[in-house]
Length: 113
Length: 109
Image 1 (tube, helix red, strand yellow):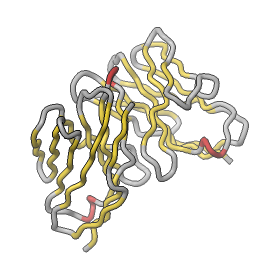
Image 2 (spheres, rainbow over the protein chains, first blue to last red):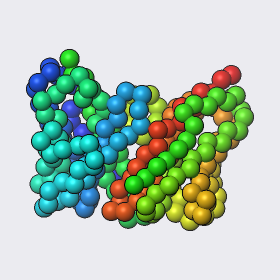
Image 3 (tube, rainbow over the protein chains, first blue to last red):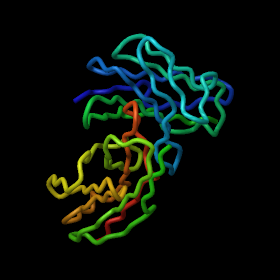
């Protein structure tokens, strides 16, 4: 199994600012995923991050708003840019492997005021 | 694309059995997950089905029928701590996992 940590665990940010969320995995993984969970909603995939290439974004999400870095096989960052109250969510990092492995980090709870 | 349907809410009695259904329509299928999520916490893996049939794991069982695009999660001997949201999710191409809206289960005494 993979152990995933995220920083920060929670933050309160002002409108118009940006926040970078870090995701660290204890083993090398090919693919990392970033999800958002808005209040009372299920998880929505933001993008898939592969090491050495640009992230692949899902419909409704763009790189200017959610830039992602993937510098190596154990680490990724997601930046939430020019934040608005609608960005208040839990952001989760996930890693997947072959077969049934699909693990989630503890999440970053973001509140935008 | 992926379309996943499950009931939004269910209520069941402590000690009873509850079945949470999930139907899906997907452009690719590489397995179906069930996750449990308590309020304010990250999802916790419960089960993964890739072949048809029933997988039993303690009080929890999960069933899959690929031809019908249907799965269910069965919870036996319900406990108060089982009150949570249960998320059905489908793994499609490129290991991408798409989640349903989740079923909020309330267990009452």
